[in-house]
Image (cartoon, rainbow, N blue to C red; front, side):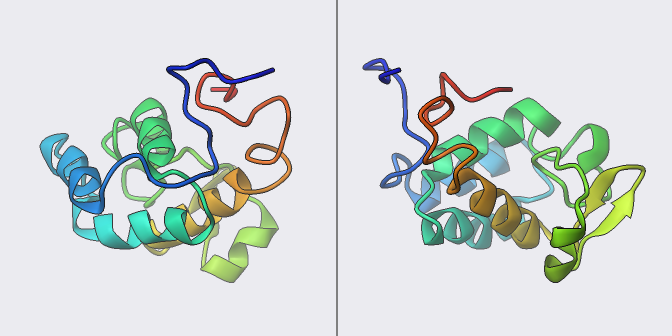
Length: 131
């Protein structure tokens, strides 16, 4: 499936600057705003467009203000897996509690850059992402 002209690939250069990324979090009243630079850098380090990360954070937790994100540094609604222990995560009723927002972003960026999403032929763009 090819991406529509208004679609965004998960992998690729950022389509949003670090300052704009931070402004979205600030304007949304996100508790992750103070970690914006580190979150942005985690996505860029894995070759993931940070705008995709923002879209997921908005969808999953209203930028950290709802659901499992509250008190757990889990912007992206991540389920808990033992592999997350390396990032300092613990299990909270099947969801991950991360030590900080950057660790959460590192985990999600790793998922997005791998074979399930970014390099997949099925889920490699914002419009094909399985929310």
